[in-house]
Length: 134
Image 1 (cartoon, rainbow, N blue to C red):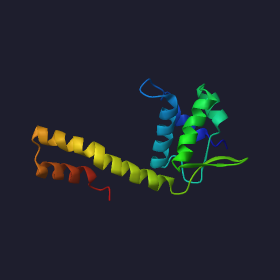
Image 2: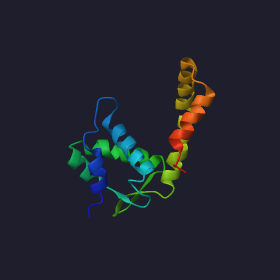
Image 3: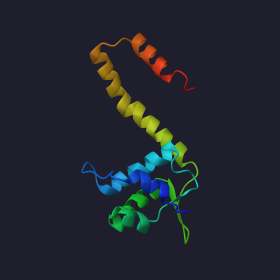
Image 4: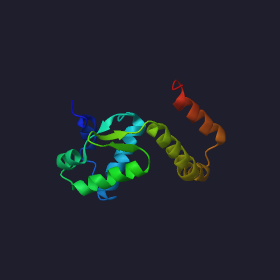
């Protein structure tokens, strides 16, 4: 079984001009870890494999992987490959929650206030949308 089968199927057609490709690759791998598509302890495809499959420079892939290692999300096991570290998903979830609460939520709240939506209406909508998720 190829370690890259899952990642390759979700990386198709994600490159755009909004950010450097290494950053887009890094962000997609982060999303895959958060979503559980890449599990802790699971191997990620080699730099060479990703570069070949997506026709991007191997240095681009290496830069994305290097940043993920620096962030404590991946580890390189000499002679074996690159793996998702234990605790990576929890670490990412905490970071994303904090980013949402401090960066995105205040903007959302400002928009809610601008539109004059009542607190009660928001609570009702959240309760309705989350019903059955617990």
